[in-house]
Image (cartoon, rainbow, N blue to C red; front, side):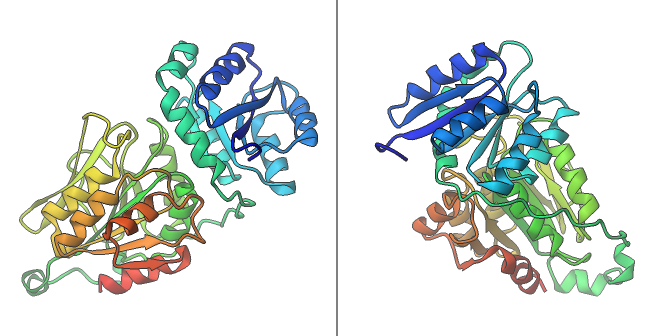
Length: 355
């Protein structure tokens, strides 16, 4: 950052979007738009003159699409990139691909009413840019080949009634934000087919979570699906909170299930990690394991402390392996974390705790 200001390069083929974003970003005293470009070729010339702290990038553009440009940038000279794109159900697949190629965050841009949307979301947009400026951009990890999916019968027999009486099923709740899509991918890929039931809140737009869950389901040995109201939390299954809906853990007898519902933004998010963690503290207590991963802000910090106070075991991703060490750092600062681990050790620790 030069002159203590975050220098941003805006790349979008719409002159209206470029002008609107410039006004919004520069309304924050910590941000300055160093340049605006109508396509990637112009952007390259600006980058040759000066490397931005953050690049805001559209996907659909003339001459070269944003995904191709992103891949070139991240493979040659990685910089923090925020995707700002129109997302439909089909388009969310493209945005997910952008995160896999190294983008640190996605902002949903509507097809109509773009200027009004940006103005209403001004604080969030500036927060995203500030968070991205602190991110550690990395070259994308290669996509792993999907492995055949087996049923739980291949590795574990059905529980006996005696086992049900003597033990209470343990569950895992996970919260993540910026950088979380790839962190969750690495974490979930490392889990065995009989892993404990898991509920995840990952900050992402509406209609995006279904595509995200479907892609993870193809890569992981556990089953991954977007959560629906009243879904049972089962061993070998991961429930991803749907975008724009709060997801809570509930319990009825020995059965854990989720409640998916509307509600106000909590810590500026819906779904909120704090909401999920608080519900886990209330309904699972010592039978829960909480994991907080890479992300900006403090969502989840208070909820994790509540989980620890209720007897749950809590884990935070360490700074070195985080894209943004915001949420874990805040949870640690509040005293809500039992163990701090690098990303590649979290899955094994979760399995060990739940055995």
